[in-house]
Image 1 (cartoon, rainbow, N blue to C red):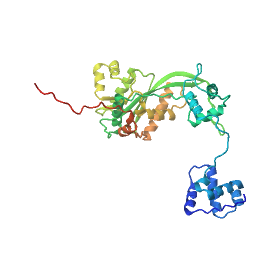
Image 2: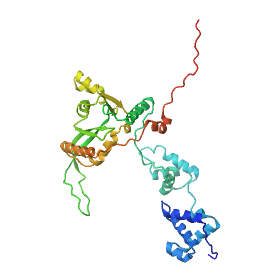
Image 3: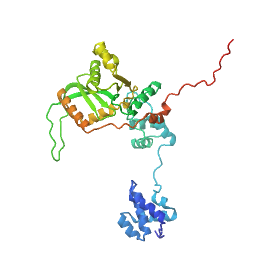
Image 4: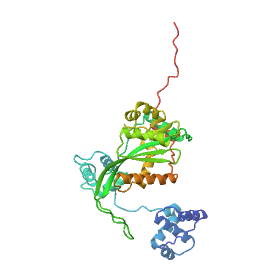
Length: 382
């Protein structure tokens, strides 16, 4: 270190380094180099810089040298570090990626790092490959072949788009007390009892409960949610048959919205969610009386996310049902208490997705209309 490098920053460079140190997420080494340059510009000695910033003298020297011989960006960035050559060539990495994306060997559910390493050894001239080499190359390509996600893959056709835009237009309408929009869905729940009493929490110890439990049957939750006002209703039933759905629809019309002229109901395509369910449950004149005040709007298949009440059911699950509830009576009591508090808090779902946004975000998936024949020649009369 015989050459002494003198750092002289311009005002613009000082401002840039000051902004770098003032906030944001940056690598610690980059921040320390910025501190070194500012201290060197202020005339602080190399020994004092190294002591105050907790770096070695060689780090101070290299940072100053790279600034003087190069520029500010060069002084702040990392120098290339020596190391062993990559064991896999570009073609071999492509082969690894292709193998990881293919079906696993017979008798195995998924690829593992060891399986991939052994497969690549058989297909290349390498005598051995470590699991770490395979892991790093997969990580660079953001691949995790041992993981899978299960999700619904909708078929976006004309019917899908029509139902989606119908529901989105309903959500966008101005509120009309005579024509309310109500989202409806159901959710099954298990009734779980304790075999041993849980140990309550105390200072220094969280609550503990036994892994063994007693299954006390199942129940069902029908959930109503008004799109335009802070109201929801949770109805607990022992099952979710067509008769239960029909009873919910009659209560919706006669009990919850007796003054409404027409109630628009958003619901999914479950087989029990049908007009026929009311005729199956009530006499024909009663079924027709209720249906005259109801208007069903079905979300597309595999698109339950369009039903606003799905969000409310998620809130219910996290705030109220995320525990063991042992009896039907307890479930009725707890959901009623949750419903009362949430209605009193005037909680609402803020829906942001609109028809216009759907056409922008999903435009490529929209079906293409058939080509029109612009010129139609009329035949001459004989």
